[in-house]
Length: 122
Image 1 (tube, rainbow, N blue to C red):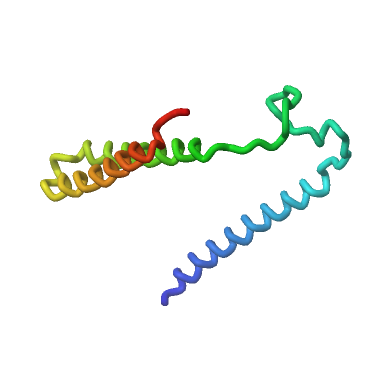
Image 2: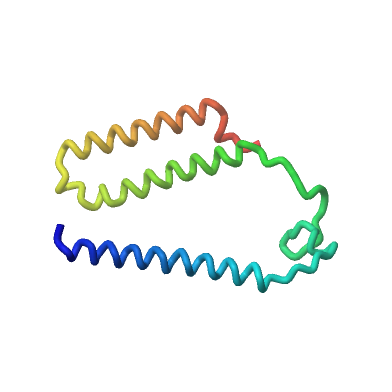
């Protein structure tokens, strides 16, 4: 193993140590400097500058998470489709069939969500 490899790894080690020390020192300074004056106003739940109305804890419906997950899934599909479409002519027939399988799997996921009633806003 040539000496240059050791120097490269030594630079990475130094950068890691400096980064970890930077984080530790900043957390320590924030812990020392942070004000600690408890008051009833600070104990209130913060709600966009307004006084909170109702309970501070409310149950979130699962269907909102399902909408979010479906959005992320189809958003990621678009992220994969654009680069593929740009170089489609250069890829050949195999890439077309691979993308067809990918879109088919996502389509069946959409059909499944539709049949389960996930896409109905209540």
